[in-house]
Amino acid sequence: MSDTPATSLAERLAARFGDTLTVSTQRNEITAELAAADLIAVATALRDEPGFRFSELIDLCGVDYLGYGQTEWDTTDISWTGFSRGVEGQAMGRFDWAQRPRGDNEPRRFASVVHLLSIEHNRRLRLRVFCADDSMPVVPSLTSVWPGVNWFEREAFDLYGILYDGHPDLRRILTDYGFVGHPFRKDFPLIGNVEVRYDAEQKRVIYEPVSIQPRVLVPRTIRNDADLMQAKAEAADHWREN
Image 1 (cartoon, rainbow, N blue to C red):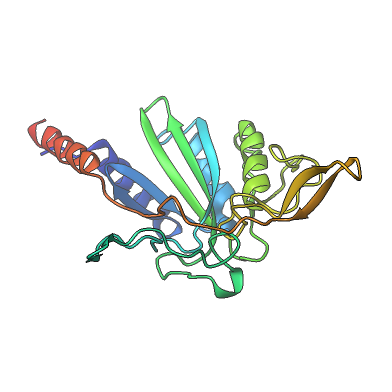
Image 2: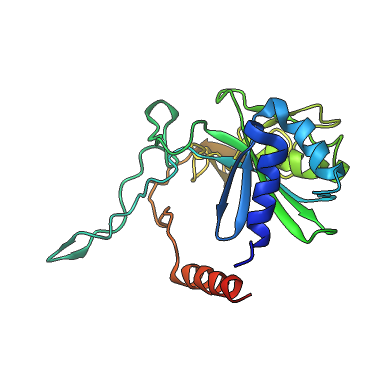
């Protein structure tokens, strides 16, 4: 049986970078985790060295792992009245930072995830860098390696509050002027902080605390869907046959 492209790339990454990278493969997709201090050197090597040639950075995003792996809906227990569904929210949003339901699956709260493409070798690679400080998440900017990442890093800063050290113009890009907070963080209130209405007597728009009661309507869960498992099995059969 010949090696899959993912397997051969994982082996090359391990041989080239050693303990600098922690390489894992799932669903024939490779993720390489590394420290923030090593990001620029590794990224430059992945872009320039003939064995990799990841010339294209196709995406960068932030991730908030607060409460990762924990579900808010319990649908396994039944009663005479039916399955259990929605549960009470733990805070104005989903979580309160002081009482956060942090799991043991991830070592830090925030991470910056980069998706790379090698056109020359027809390979894809995911890099994940955890921010060392949860209260002030900082990672190096990749604008010196792939200049097109500029807007992606601004988006991650705006939505998650991740600071990209060395970015030439790190400003908000999606939220309005004067916006407070970072709306994609798990402890950001899903119903917002204030509500706005027009007061006919005062003849002006006024801002008041939100009066809506928070409810969990959409389950936050992690699962392996049947179609993904089937695709994985078919891919394995394909490589065995070839």
